Every structure is written in C-alpha cells, then in structure tokens.
Length: 148
Image (cartoon, one colour):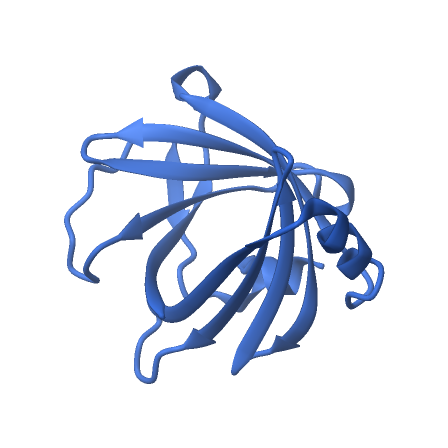
C-alpha cells in the first residue's frame, strides 16, 4: 500500500509554457463510495486501476493502490463504470523541488483548471508559482470523483 499526500489549487494564470510534458486522460469510476474509490484511467496508451481510501483524521493523505492493466481491459471496464467520465489534458509543470500536475478539463467541465502537488509529508514546503490560485484541498466539489 502506498500513501498519497496531495494538495489542490485552482489555476489563475498561464502555465502551459512551463510544462515539461502533457497527456490526454480519460477516467471513470467503478466505485465512488467515500471509503473506497475505484478508478480506471487511460493515458498515453497505458491503463491503471486505482483504489483510494481515506486515512482517518487527514484531509491531505489517502491510502492508494495502483495497478497497470491492459488497455483493452480498461476500455471494457469503462463500459461498466458509473455513468459519466472525465476527459482532461494533464500538464506536468516543474516548480522548485516539486512538479505540479495541472489538469485542464474538457466536456461538461470545460474551463476548469486544477493544479495538484504530491508531497512526501503533510508539512513539506513547496514553492507557490504565480499562476497558482485558491487552495481547494479538502473541498469535495473539486475532487475528480465528484466531477463526473
């Protein structure tokens, strides 16, 4: 089991020129129960099954398991997921000793841009670039599972 320590922010400025990489992502959910979220994601001809579960008494840290699966199987699983899927472009934007994952949403969430940073400890220091806006960590309406 791994742990995911993540903070989320809205994006208020231009960042694309700073990106080191971008990829197109499609994802959907088999379970959206808050105690166990099960997601299928396809990005760059690679598919991943993820299971996430909250850690008691933490807004930032979750338990996380990820398994690469064959893309064809992931495409089949997408057909049995809960209705709705997320389509987004993810940009990797280096900043100091960290890299932000900046998601530009498409479809029904067109115009929404969210930056995430994964930390090794909840108290880790990170540089806040100028394009970073309001922190939305812990606000359920900004979690992918609630955007479907």
